[in-house]
Amino acid sequence: MPGKHSHHQKYITIPIAAITLLVLIIGVGGYLFYKNFKELNLTKIELANTKSNLAQSEANAKKLSEDLDIERYINSTFSRQISEIAGTVGKLDQLSKTDKELLQKYSKVYFLNENYVPENLTDILPDYLYDKSKQTKMHAKVLPFLKSMIVAAKADGINLEIISAYRSFGQQIALKDNYTVVYGSGANTFSADQGYSEHQLGTTIDFTTAELGSNYSVFEKSDAYNWLLKNAYKYGFILSYQKGNAYYEFEPWHWRFIGRSLADMLRQENKIFYNVDQRTIDNYLIKIFD
Ligand SMILES: [Zn+2]
Picture 1 (cartoon, rainbow, N blue to C red):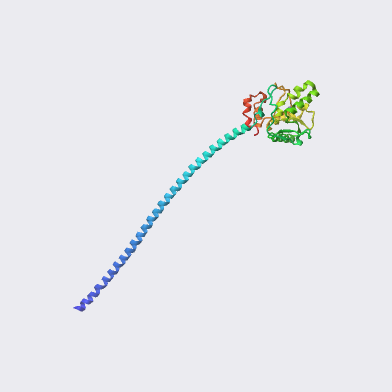
Picture 2 (cartoon, rainbow, N blue to C red):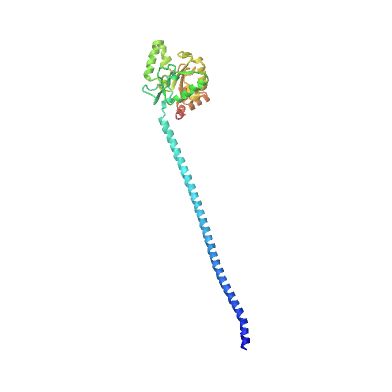
């Protein structure tokens, strides 16, 4: 029965085609799935690699940063040490360049060398002088302190004027001769001995006021003298020969610059410059112009 057979065969052909198609679909699908899955896996691996690289980079960066911190610390420590050494050297250098005579105590037996001349003398402006026509010099580094003091005094109604500042050895001799002529033998205690060396330093000033003028022998009674007793230390000046001192006759007009820190110490401890040990005084030399 061929007819029956072919009819039957037709029925069988359809499932075979369907199965073939299904197998094909599964095959292709499987392949595509496999391919995608493989790529996905590769991507995952790449991602993991990237992550690992990133972590490595971060670790490297952290290490670099730590190294940099260490480097910075070493550098800052080193530069601090350098600057400390430089500071010490600078101070020693400054000290070696600071004139030791400026804080020396001079007495009737200990004089400044006759050849001594201060390192830098400068002219005082005539405005500050009692005798505006008399050229007067002083130590250049002390001048700013003197100016500040005169300005402050003026603000308090005190008109300080300078009678005398730097005097060379020769000028001092001439002055002594002059006084000898006028006052006879009394000149020894009045002029030449008194503050002899201190004027040769260029740091010492004899004051009067606009009101007293040349009549400064009565300076003790002036408001200017009281003002100086209260305020001169702030500008580094002290009264060298106080009333009743054991060294010289009392000279109320004669003020010596010793620097603010030493003047302040003397005031706080109620001490007199000429009574303080020279070694103690010398510790203030480095700060004399501060
Ligand atoms: Zn004097």
